[in-house]
Length: 395
Image (cartoon, rainbow, N blue to C red):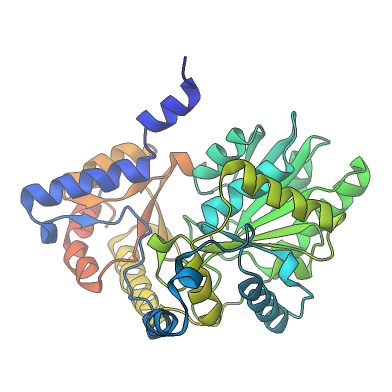
């Protein structure tokens, strides 16, 4: 007998992946330029020059064994120190190399953290809208997943959040800039969030951990600032990926940063190492550990995403759609003109528009549009978006 839960996860892909696979099939049928695929958050901007330059330099400077061999289980010590030093310089923190655990991207960071923290009967809380895999990751670690309904502005409702926390709450996941909305949590929301967590931790006599999922940290526009949450809350684990900032999603490289101010910080870090071992996630891709360490602070050309955002957001609003204006990431969250987001997506498909219904994000009645595509694709898709708006009588 096999694990039926895993069988079901394997047989039924996420709605995002289903749309992506449909898009590939449709492009083969009618031509790539005739399908407007906004399904996947796959960076369209090339990696910054430092990435390829560093790869070339590493192949000349390092032996094959150094570059392609195993690192320490938690990652190369020099790489971890470089990341700690960078975070300290940027955010005034006190990380050390032994605060950092190198991972196979942000998904591994999250699953390692959850498996390190969760015990039987624990609950994990996330704010809707949330990346759908949070539910999968949490439940696979043995937790009950609790989704909080969104506020109108997708910020933190302190009173509602406090009601959702109970003695079984082990961790809260936040994602800012947010996938799928592009919303950045304000400092006021962060302070409200942390106030509740501090008060509830004291009330129940155990720490409630804050897990921050931060692959989009540098992808922000119009001088918006992303608060670094360890400055506001001690029992915090930062999950980071270089996939979006450096446009290297296929290289699967990221890290966990364990706050040095955390209760029993050494025990938590040991649990992170143990979870990585149990899950088989030791020794993240070695060459890209070194690449990441030398490219800290660099990003792909974010101005392209800003241009795409402005082009798409302004056009859709002009057509009569109601959209959340994203301050970061590369997603636009559009309120559907009918209650059934999936039905809207099926109508969009008839015009070769592939957008993701929001139900699995915990926020019905919206669709996610990934604008990390070529500007030409957006320009070519606008007439289809306009025609769809006219069919719904939006203008």
